[in-house]
Length: 481
Image (cartoon, rainbow, N blue to C red):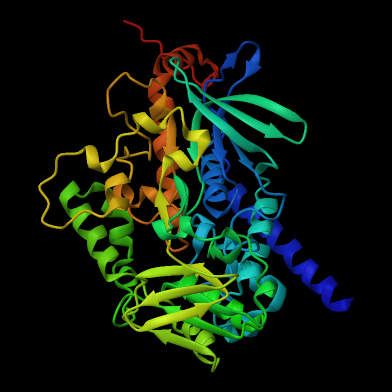
């Protein structure tokens, strides 16, 4: 009880300091956006779809800028994002020192939250941040900033309107609702504009015998089974290790490459210059950088790989692409250049894809979004499908139309999720630069709001009549001839 009391006191003190810092900085800024109504219903200034880390960072940055931001998330409160649902790593892959969504506020960092409860010595001893503890921090982040998240709200349709507003149709705990917003932000994560990527062969297999690494899966059901994992990235290692720890009889990692990637090139390039400057690069340089990072691939973390290799019943099969799969009675025979593997269950750790048509809520905008494949570029690097399908975004992460005028209101929707990477760099989903992305998004939306309502803001300036001088501060001089 004593420890619990001390920990609670630590967070109470941190909260008080955060509020003092905000007061010293005169934050949040006063609300200033011109209010709108539609059919007697207030129109939200910004609606954010997704209440995970990116959604909260965006909402916080907008709020501090004096803009109303309301988040809608389909998960129950406290379970937004992947951290305690489908993520399976033991710790975060990012170094503990990264400030994440703190937006430049020291008291809002994970380190401040951690030290307030456990002290400096514990911070010094900490290697990497435990995954579930990161979720605890994000729960506190939401509470500390009093962010408005509407949980268990599932978006079923996004409809841009000719008047520039966006209609959101959603199912909620109280039934279906239509919400209108001037701006909508998609903070929908790694699979933000699609879903899991699966090779075509997956469609030929009984669904009970396979899963994608992003699926919700009770790994306890794999106890005693021969499991295959396709891939060698971080999610493959996490899935393999979780299966082994759950008692799998064996895990065969089926890896197409002749060797595992060793160097994280993105980590080497991930400095302030790239975070700030990537968005301003010419298109050919953006393409060249993202293509190179994709070809080099991101290696799985050392700790994640050791978590697998410590098990004697884990086998790393290199140069082992799938050639075909034969289906038996509750058994899959996976044929490879290294011979067949008899497996009881197969996990595809094959990443994600941009595929608008797997997300019915995007049906109204999918045909109209300008993508990089619509651009005319002289490129020496071959195109990956992900790069071709990536949206070609404006400076505020806003979508653009393939055909001007075909989808009025489309530019009122902003893509603040992973597929923005080719246009903006990795500032809209990953921990290292999420604050930079959130501040860029908020500044961009603020600029758009101001420009759209400039006549009203000018009128307000004309009407402003709070005097600085009352007329009694001086006596006019008199001069006699």
